[in-house]
Amino acid sequence: MAGIKLFGIGVRRSDMSAEDFHDYWRHPHGTWGRQMSILRAYVQSHQIHSEHLGPEQSRRECVAEMWLDNEKDLRGFHQDPVYAKYLHDDAEKFVDYSRAIYFPTQEEVLASGPTAGRTFNPGDDMWSPAVRPYSVKLLHFVGPDGDADWASAEDESLSRSLQALRHVRCHPFVSAGDPAPRFRGVQELWWPTQRAFRAGVAAAPQALKRLISAAGDGVTLVAQAERFL
Image (cartoon, rainbow, N blue to C red; front, side, top):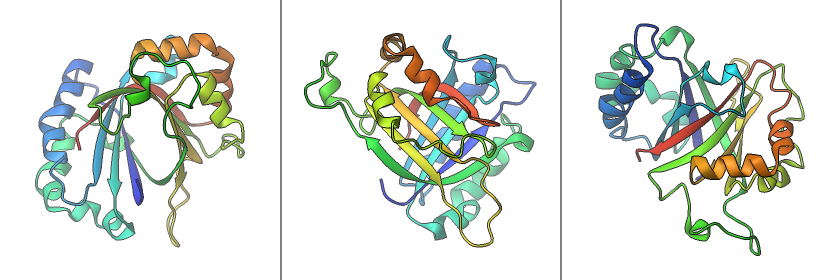
């Protein structure tokens, strides 16, 4: 999808249980969020535990992904009527605002589906996160002190080894006068199910380690991605 993708990375309030946090983010917050007129797509990624990642995986429990047409809409995001009326104040009810991170990016799609000739799991050749309400994804945000060559020529082959069906790299969107971006970039890999993710990592555990190495002060998590718009 062309335009700008804005990530919002959050942490739940310390006085809220994980179950209540994720429920409240879905509704009413997500119900309101999908009504923002400037959004072209809206996905909530809810962190789920993976034995393949360390304890830092739960440091951030939610990643909102919001697609906008252009920089004007990005700059005016907080003036959207729905955001101003419902979402800004509501977020304080479940998110620790002091630790929130917003990161505007532009996408580079490396793989948009399975390659011809590979052995599919049932339905893989018809699957796309764009038309499914749920998917499982790896989100890997590379910190500013991470590997400067985080976008490697071998990335696509690594994701193919992991049997991911989609792979996107997101690069910082920065205009003149903006502060330095919080991350160098993002790797996003999709699987249809948690079972498919586990099978992919079991098939190529070193590929996962290589893909998420040298992130520095970054954020890496596995999530259930829920498409709201």
